[in-house]
Length: 303
Image (cartoon, rainbow, N blue to C red):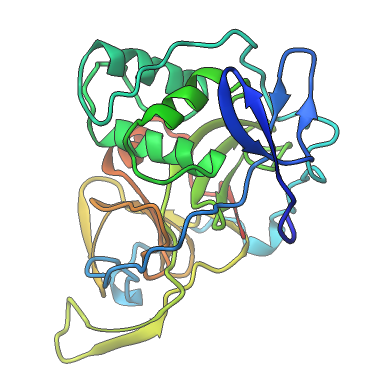
């Protein structure tokens, strides 16, 4: 996307909504394109537990891991006209979703089922408003450009009930991980269709200076950047937490140097890391347990 779009106001499923002229009308639904976030940026807190492992503390790259230069650029669609092949419609019938805040219960269980249906990974719909659920809600809010709270207010509930498509990235061919830094979302694309969407937090873009966690006589300095580009996962560390130069990270999967997708206890609605791509601990467990991101998986990072 380039530049800002003019917007208009329409009613979708009884909800007064700000939408763009680039929307696509299908036989079953009016579909908004992925919006630019409009909320005011929140200053990221000082990072305390991101890791960029030193060469002496990293697992060796697998001998058969492809070079990043072998990764072909994924095909993308130019805007939303026509409706790209990687978008799956849900149907035009509204679903009643109650504004539950962050409470557990039957309404939360129904909301979890809806989020899973829309492609925002929650895991088991157990009615408990835990980490996986709040992360899925935040990912949903990011996708639609709503306020990023991780709780379900009336506006979020209305959108959740009326959204006519599954969440999707812009990749519409191949199997890869797509990391959208603008919306702070991670898309798992399988055979050209987005299978799951996750909340993520990438590099804050700010300079940092911190004491090396493994050697307090050293000072680590750098710019907290998650570089755009096409890569492949080259190595990984399986169970538990691993100590890096800047702190501990959970079950990392590296894709460029010391930068990895990994689990973290804090995955906010804004860029906050030293450069790694944060996911919640339940999301990272899910990706490991299902084997969806093996070594060699293409990773596309873009703004």
